[in-house]
Amino acid sequence: MTNRKTVTVFAATGVAGSACVEELLRQDLFDVQVLVRASGQQEKSSSGLLNAEDGKKKRWDDWQRRGVVVRSADVTDHASLIPALEGTDYLVSCVPLFATESQYPLIWAAKEAGVERFVPSEFGFIYDWEQFWPTDNAHKTAARQKVFIRKMIEMAGLDFTIIPAGLWIEYFMAEPVAVMGDGNTRFSWSTGRDVGRIIPHILAHPASRNAVCPVAATAYCTWNELLEIREGLLGRKVARNYLSNEDWKRIYAAAPDGPMKAILGIGVAATECPEGMALWANWNALHLPGFRGTPLETLFPEYIEPRVSELQGALG
Ligand SMILES: NC(=O)c1ccc[n+]([C@@H]2O[C@H](COP(=O)([O-])OP(=O)(O)OC[C@H]3O[C@@H](n4cnc5c(N)ncnc54)[C@H](OP(=O)(O)O)[C@@H]3O)[C@@H](O)[C@H]2O)c1
Image (cartoon, rainbow, N blue to C red; front, side, top):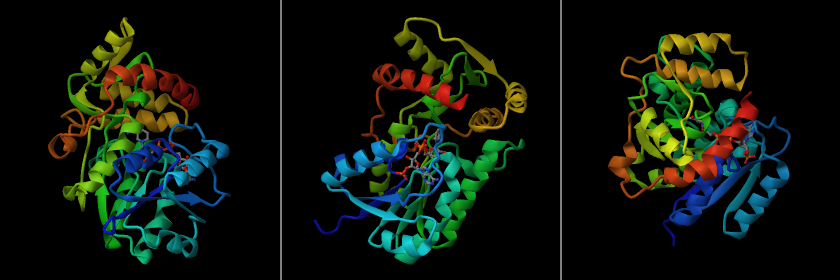
């Protein structure tokens, strides 16, 4: 096969990144590379849980055996990054929320290396909207940073694909569940793994070039519908509070600094918009009707419930 594009995944051992690599391999439409960070950088994650080096090494070895090209670079240094990105057509970044800035040198190097398209690490709100919501908070700062990165990609003349993915279910199910608003507005729901899984399908679709593609990678339904399914699976009521924008602002203001504060900012932003939240988009229903999110019946017991406890411990 000669006309295959090469996709390089950055932060490939993260939640979204590793699922993306696995789906690229399964899909078998692209040649696959991962960009490994030369050691020495502060290790970060979206949740506060850090991936151990030996676990990553096993992953890289396994991927290599399955045909993935592993390229290592000092990702803070353009002279090291340019050769590492040569031959890449699509660069997919899955960096964690708290390492968003690690993408800056990549943009320059991607341009110099002749990369065609840059998919920045987004996968949440439609940040172009969130940046203008009235109340400032730690999450809105991150939103503005993500928009800034996107604009830099455009100004560099690179193609882009922006993938908002709504709320990652596992981050929002700790009891009592803090519902954003009255629970009757439809939201886009994803899990980190389904986000990673859907990326290769979005990339393979011609409508994703220079486009914002807001997906509901796992489900597209209201909070109440999602919680009803969870209750059916657990066989009991799920404790919950319906929180207005005023409630969210109060809880946000009282929270100590840290990753949880940024997550509470999501609630402030989500309840700020009169319509409920800019999360109703479902690009995949239109363009990827064959893509199936992981069924909630298996997802809740096998992934979400254990992950909720893990995240509660890490986020404090
Ligand atoms: N909408 C939501 O509810 C929601 C929830 C969570 C996350 N997200 C978004 O999804 C995206 C991906 O998040 P994720 O949770 O999948 O990431 P993650 O699992 O936290 O990513 C961890 C990986 O990031 C890489 N990494 C660690 N430190 C780094 C640094 N200093 N600079 C660059 N890379 C570093 C490492 O991979 P390597 O060693 O392989 O480089 C590590 O294994 C983010 O944009 C985040 O904001 C959205």
